[in-house]
Length: 114
Length: 113
Image (cartoon, rainbow over all chains, first blue to last red):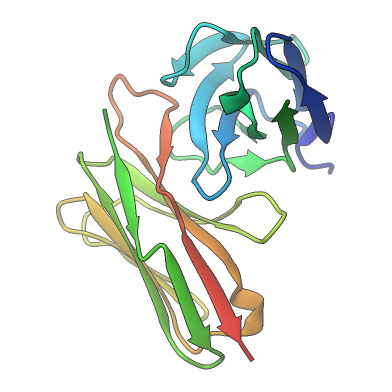
């Protein structure tokens, strides 16, 4: 089975623009979580979705939003991009999103803001 | 909010030496997970600890969860060059923090042959 897939792999944007990142979970996984990883730090939780409902939200501004589709894929949207949004954005899936399940990560989208 | 701290930030060892990384949470955890991220790669799940005082082993890797469920450690015996990478602990606080897995900043391990 394919793992978690994310697109695009790399993206360059300028300040003030918006971006949409996409994620397809492992087949059979109904929960998707999004993380931001700044160079030299651990992944920071942004959102978790399960069955198209937001189940958890980290300490990120309202410029960050996400949604999950009926096929369990997900999009992360970031508006009014700032230089500080430059990071690796990771998507992770799990069967139900329960806390006792491992997160399966994709390779991420490297976002650079100029 | 919940914080998870890891030490050391970096560890350089000669192949064959042992390695330990420590993880401390500001709050009691319902469980803790460990991940490994190779350079240029994504985090890969290693193991989960749930019970107070739990110890689990995977070949040369030994994972411990503290009695108070606020700290954890990963010990690698006789490191190999394949052990190179960043090791992260990540904890769930439970309760209203549903879905929120909090990662430590990681320990970067380099192994010299």
